[in-house]
Amino acid sequence: MEVALPHDTPLISTIVAGIVLAFVLGALAHRMRLPPIVGYLLAGVVIGPFTPGFVADQKLANELAELGVILLMFGVGLHFSLKDLLAVRAVAAPGALAQIASATLLGMALAWAMGWSWGAGLVFGLALSVASTVVLLKALQERRLVETERGRIAVGWLIVEDIVMVVTLVLLPPLAGLLGGVATRNPDDSQLIAWLGVGPVWGTLAIVAVKITSFVALMLIVGRRVAPAILNYVAHSGSRELFRLAVLAMALGVAFGASTLFGVSFALGAFFAGMVMAESPLSTQATRDTLPLRDAFAVLFFVSVGMLFNPAVLAQHPFAVLCVFLIIVVGKSAAAYMIVRAFRYPKSVALTISASLAQIGEFSFILMVLGAQLAIVPPLARDLVVAGAILSILVNPFLFLAVSRFAQPDPQPAEPAEPVAVPGAVDEAPTSLVDHVILVGYGRVGSRVGQALRAGGTPLLVVEDEPSAVRDLKAQGVDVYVGGASDREVAKRTNLAAARCVISAISDPYEAGALIEQARALNKNVRVLARASSPEAVTHLRHLGADVIVFSDDEIARRLIQEALGPAEAGRGEPSDAPPVAPALPRVEAFALDAGPAGAPRLAPTEGRG
Image (tube, rainbow, N blue to C red):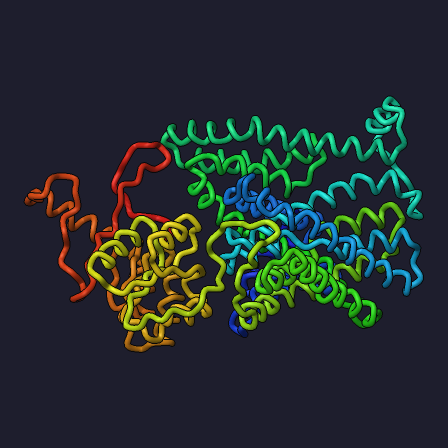
C-alpha cells in the first residue's frame, strides 16, 4: 500500500525521505560496525517500489544521484592533471580494456547457460565489466588513496571504462538489430553517415571519436585558460557566495554541456571541468566549497541503487544471482590483479586495483535500461545486475579492509612498465622511533609546529596526506607517513603506542576527535595537544580527552590585546614567542594571514589540514 503525502511535492519528498532514512539506517549500520553504505542501500530498498509503504519517485532519485556523480568526478578532477593521467596510461588503458573483455566473456558464458542470445549476453557482460564511479572514488577517498600511485591507476582505469561505456551507449541503438533487438538511429547522425558514404557502424564510430576528441581539445586548449580566469575574477569580487556559485556553475554547466553537445557522459565532462579548474590557485577553496553537496548527493546515489532492487529475485533465481556476484567480485578482481601484475607492479598495487573494481554501478544500470528498451536483453537481466551491484557494493568495504590488513609491503620493481614518482602509498615500514612526537597535519599551522620541534631536536614523525607536503618532508629527511588521522594501520606504523606526544594540527573536529580516541585507546599515557577552530570543537575534543586545546579565536584575541596594550618590541605584524605549553613543546599561535577569495589579506582562523 502506498502512503499519500500532503501536497504534490515529489522532489522534496524524495530528497527528504532519502536523506532522513539514509541517516537513520547509516547511523545504525555504523553502530553495528558495518559500513554506512549498507544503511544507505537499505534506505533505498525501504522507499523503493518493491516494498510496502511510501514509494519515492525513482526517476527523480536517479537524476539526483547523477548530481552526486558529477560533483564527485569534479572533485577528483580538481586533484588531477593531464600529466597524472598520462603517467598511468601504459597500465590503465590496456588494463581496463583487457579487464572489460574478460568480464564480458564471463557474463556471456552465464547468459549462454541461461539460454539467452549472444547479443543479450554481450550487453549483459558489458554491464558486469564496469565499476561504479561513486563506490570506487568514495573507497579511495576514505583511505586517502586518490593521490597515490595506486589511486591514479584506479582513476585512470575508471576514465578508460567511462569512455568505453560512452561509445557502447552510442553504438547500441544502431546495432540493436544485429544484437537481436530493434535498431534505432539518431536522424541527424543518419544523415551525416549517409553524406559520408560509409557504413552505419564505422560512421557512428567516427562521429563518436570526433565528438570526444573535440570536447577534450576544447577543455585542454580553451578551458585551461578560461576556467582559472573566471575563478580569479569572481574571487576579486569579494563575495564568497558568488565564488561558490561560480564553482558549481562551471562544474554542472560543463558536465551538462559535454553530455548535450558532445555526447560525453556527465561524469567524464565533470572530471575534465575539475582538471582544467585545477590550474587555478583557488582550486583548494573550490574543492572545499563543493564537499558538502558532494557528500549529500553521493548518499542519494546509493539510495537510488537500493530503490532498483527487487528482493524477490534472490528467492526466484538464487543460483543466477550467486554467479553474477562471483563474476563481479571474483572474476573481475582476478583479471584486474593478473593484468596489473603483468605490468610488474607490486602486489599491494594490484590488490588495491582489484578491490576497487570488484563492484558495478551507474553505467551498468544505464546499459541495462537501454538494452531492455531496445529488446536486446530480457527483464531478468536488469534484476540480476541490480542484485549483483548491491551485493558487490556491500562487500566492497570489506575487500578493502582485507587488502589493508593482509597486503604486505612490496619493493618497487627495478624497471616498472611506467614509473610514477608519486609519494604516499601506505606501504611504509613501521617506524623505529620511540618516545617521539607524532604531528598530524603539516599545513600552515602544522608546518610551523614541525619546524620548531625539529629545530629543538625533538624526535618527530609526521602524518600527512597532501602529496606535495609529503614529497618535501621526505626530501628533508623527515619521517612521514601517509594516511588518515585515525587510520589504524598508520597508527601501528607510527608506533603510537610508544609515542610521548600526539599533536593534532588539523581543523576538522571529527577527524581530530577520531585521532584522539585512537591515541587514548593505544596509549593511555600519551600527551595529546589539539587545534580547534570553534567553541563547539573545543568542547568536543575536551570530552574525548585532549590534554591541551589551542582555540584559534582565543589566540588571535590574546595577540590583539597584547598589541593594543603594549606593542611587541620585535616589530609590528610579527608574532611574538608565546610561553611553552609543555617543557619540550613550543606553544604555537594558531592563526595565519588569509587572503580569502577577495584577495584582501585579513587575520582569520586557519582552515583545511594543519
